Image 1 (tube, rainbow, N blue to C red):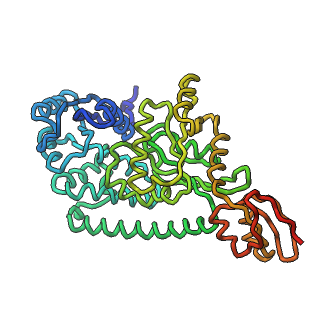
Image 2: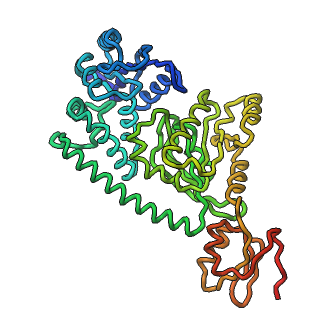
Image 3: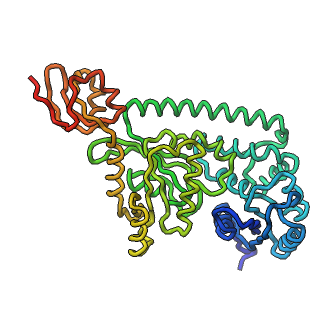
Amino acid sequence: MGRFKPFSTAPVKERAILVGVDRGSGDWTIDESLEELRRLAETDGAEVVQVVTQRLDRPIPKTYIGSGKVSEVAHLVGSLEADVVIFDDELTPSQQSNLERAFKEPTKVIDRTALILDIFGEHARTREGRLQVQLAQLQYVLPRLRGMWSHLVGEQTRGGIGSRFGQGESQLEVDRRLIRNRIATLREELKRLERRRNVQSKARWESGIYRVALVGYTNAGKSTLLNRLTGADVYVRDELFATLDPTTRSLDLEEGRRITITDTVGFIQKLPTTLVESFKSTLAEALAADLILKVVDASDPHAAKELDAVDAVLSEIGASDIRSVVVYNKCDLLDGETRRALALEHPEAVQMSALEGTGADALLYRIAQEASDGDVTITVVVPYAKGMIIKMLHERCQVIREEYVQGGLKATVRASQRMHDFLEPYRIEDVPEDGRIAPTS
């Protein structure tokens, strides 16, 4: 052996204690909610060493849990050498401050909201995504400034859960006025990015492109589905919030119509209000869609509750009235009897496995049905000089018949209402509803 002993350079996982209050109400049981919290903690790099629960009608105003339970958790912190205590519900600033004093430094006290924001801070890749995360973090930190901010700034030096708050802010900026100014700046910058996206969205709308948005609970397989349908190479990993930034890819349906499919941020129960507000510009991709695919992990025992959580967020952003199709993904993990029961219970849903590709053709057929629903038949003559419109006509419509005439390309097509309005200046005749073309002279 040499003079120096080898040592591991792998990051040491922080030891976490999870705490939840069972109020005997709500769609999720305390065990289900804490299991999800465990997955969130593990996604953020922690090792859960203990789970503590208490049955209460309502949280204790001073410390969220009772004084006896506070003493119990404080004892566990010492005996298990815990680095962080994570609460399943959002703590008030005073509750957090009182708990930090009870558990003693350097033990950190955070809640589900802070944990989710920390994960988002780690996973955001695009400039807009980082801005949205920072805005949500600052909105969360502002009321907790006195009891929390300097603690988190200090934590940046040793890393770990909760250490990504501030995203490089200096100690001098630990000031309410400066934070408010920063929040205002972030909001203005996000508005500029949103205006730019609206211009792009308007261009897509005017071109008649049919827009599909993938929404669903985190880890339902949306990114894998996008990859399967479009041949994209979106990052996929079996963890919560593996991808945050929306990704849009185009796809040509068999009938020739071009559509776009956008993968949006995953949802979760108890999604922080500040996060929903900050990510509204990203979620606007769902709001602007013609069709929403609600992707559900069919193998998850909480699939129905997760779908309810998705519907709740869609309602919150005003997208509940948009046409939608439920897609049960990961059906390869189900046995035949379960799949048949699922089909009987949800006959309008599509069953598939994005990983294996089974059911993908059925989903594409369903998308094509939805895209063509409401299409109208129109006959137009487009001048040869309008090459871009002729190109759009072939890409955005289903061509029934076409011929070259003296005035340009004469075509009878099935078009969406948007394309019908766009092509109206070139229409030469009305076509009967049965689609038969009247003879021309």
